[in-house]
Length: 154
Image (cartoon, rainbow, N blue to C red; front, top):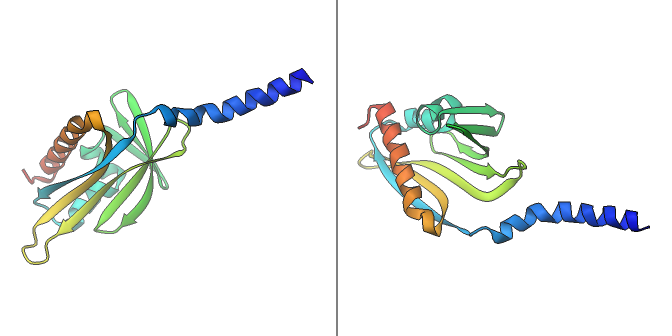
């Protein structure tokens, strides 16, 4: 009897424990950045929506299997699910946790073209912990600078 209760208790702990980590984590804050970029929306879309395009500027390497994308940086690997893609307009990826469960956090890359001037911008939506906001924004500035360099848009 005690053995059965012990196993049940152990299973409950295993179920609840991974979910508790979210209670202890600092809540991330959503932010948006806009970067003017000299490139056609169709060319830009190839660089933000395909593994080969993303590996040119966003990560060291990017693999995809259907909607699941794996991003590699140096010795780290992160997974995200492509949850929205509108051709020539935007892509939105939701980060997966270490158990390949969807987190509440995502990043979105949206292409905006002014109808009158035809100026093109890329809008980035992402999340960061409050105390890491400056570093997160700086990282995106550097990433977009790499994208501009690849596009010849510097």
